[in-house]
Image 1: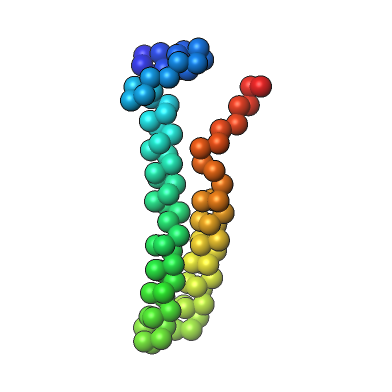
Image 2 (image 1 turned 90 degrees about the vertical axis):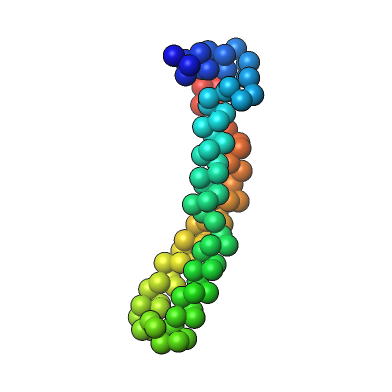
Length: 93
């Protein structure tokens, strides 16, 4: 019921901070994206992978595979974070 009230108020252009369900969901989604695509964490994993290889904990093949995957993740995370997550597209207009 609250969800429909929220949609109805939003259609009228009324937003109530703290009670706006859609706004709260979007804030949680933005935090999740920032955590999921955390560039610093991925860079730390790349450094860890390099150190494991240098200390002979990983074979060259494992190192190369892991490095390629982490670099792919890093490029994707940088692209995701470059986009403005707060920009919304109105598909009805």
